[in-house]
Amino acid sequence: MVILKFLEGSKMNKTVKIILSLLMLIVGKTYAQPYTLQSVGIAKSFSLDIYFGDKGKGAFVKYHGQKAIIALRIKNYSADNSGRTDGQPDLKTYVWDELVDGKINGTYGLTQDINSLKNIWYVRKKDGKRFKLQEIDSKGSKGNNQYLLHGALISFNHFDDHQLSIKYADGKFFNAGLPDFDSPNAVRQSTIADYNFDGYDDLAFSIPDAGMGVYREFSIFLFNPLSKHFDRLANPDFGKSKCASLCDVTLDPKKKLMFTACRGGARWWQDVYRYTSANKLVWVRSKEMDQ
Image (cartoon, rainbow, N blue to C red):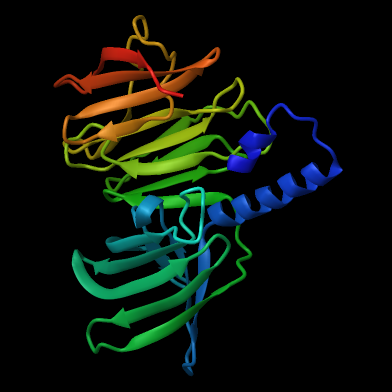
């Protein structure tokens, strides 16, 4: 994405177009799920699809030939960016506990680089047997993704379809439209985090802004622990803020503050918000950011 920003506003020649096309292929591979895995070195092989979100949250597996899905709880996540100059991780390592009826049934682990999975394994708890797995080409629909979060099955698309669908554990459904892209080759990013600091992970989606595409605009869905459903976070009153949307959202869990940042003219601005007891965002202050 750093290269994309560097090229903004410049005349795009044939070489640049080729570079951008290759970058989008890499991005597409990074977001393409599910990953299909197959056992290695055993007589009776098995295969499965694995889905997971930001920092390994919202993960689950579905074994081929079975209808049920199995929840995964992130046990350990680490990122290594020692080989990069832009701060982005080269390698991400995940370890999950497999949960069946709320009890640990086994453990999965894998390492993800920019375009593949490796060092994939599963340890079955009942006998400690370790299985080696490998990624295989999936014939599924790339770009479609799913998360399992608080018992709800969440479905969306990083690229084309703008529909969000949630199937809750009680059998109810929720469908909503996510904001459409204003620029070609855009990617919808997803984040699982506690956006209202209540101890429960929430769900957010972001797309490039409709102007120069230098920041990302967020749609946030808060998990309600009483109803066990997700509610769309209403926009605050932007009357005093410098940004007219929730953009480049960051959090301060200790102070329980939400920060947004946007560019207006040649300046970058930051708005600060806090939550009321009714989960309503209230503007606190704004300031110009250092360039």
